[in-house]
Image (spheres, rainbow, N blue to C red):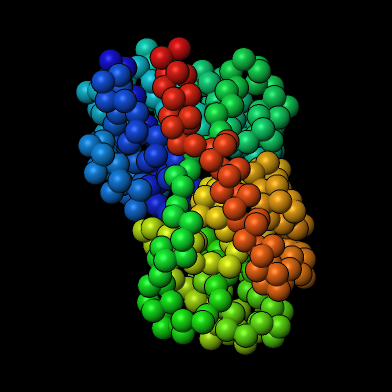
Length: 360
């Protein structure tokens, strides 16, 4: 039996944590023993892991230089003696590469890298990547950048993310309007993710301001928490949309909520948001997203949704209006997205391919 140690910076509300939870909770128990170590705070993704019988250890790292959590991580390693350490994101790679690499365990990195600023940071990133046995980017665009950064192609493994199919019926999550105090006829647009500037939700509020004068009963629901919430609320108040923009906070069953939306918005300024796109498509909902490399691999422009330039508020509103004005077009795009997810992004395939990677 292989022992797998998953290491992540957080199990908070994000796509990375959801993918980790899906994978670790579904690996065959007769072949793998799994444990999850969370450097920082736990968050919602810890519950499904524990429900599946996966032990979750929270290390409590709160600042860059904090020896006690790192000592606990080393003790956890000595106790488990994993065959594979699977880290999620560069934040988790740093302690793994410094403390755990070259101690008999293979090191796998899931996540993307961005161009480091400055020669010193580039050298540090190169040092970290030299200690990784395999990298698993979420999209082909990520694989291209790893190659450009000098990582040999044989160390890059493409495994598409997985997503569970949400009920196609709009009865799923039907209480979202009631919980927000909205009438039954309210039409919902949804944005999902951490409330951070790079997620582009300020652009979403701006684009919504255009649409609300064209469609009655239209509401924008933002699901998630983050440091930009107060600024977003002030901006919504400034442009006069606060009555129709709702901050729903972190929610447990996001796919069921997305099934209630007319469309999902992913106005990201940097590549990301692909997990939300997959969940929306799995719920048979069209997506209007930023035309960034990772999202463009998932959202088929004109077939499962629309792609617009990052920061293009007018384009976001214009493409969404097509869906609001033509419900049949929106329905067909949603169903096409659901079929696309079924064919290319199943959780079963993702788990099987990671199991093969671990055993190789």
